[in-house]
Length: 84
Image (cartoon, rainbow, N blue to C red; front, side, top):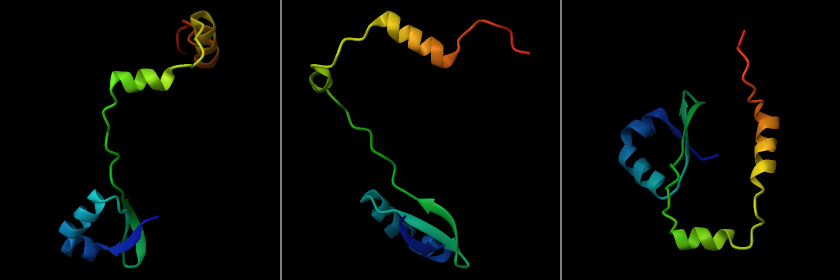
């Protein structure tokens, strides 16, 4: 849970709060002492090169396509039946 700030602080100090969000800080916004929302920084997407991805999966077991499909069908129940 992040640092508590009031609705008034959010309004008056929005620039500073945005800079702290950029640094990874989270906030719980309160109104009349009651928590009403949470501000959390978005996760930044990181580019992963093909070489790094390939290296991460080197040594992983091979996937049996038929067995994988059977598992998906069992869990997802993809039967072609009309919905009622």
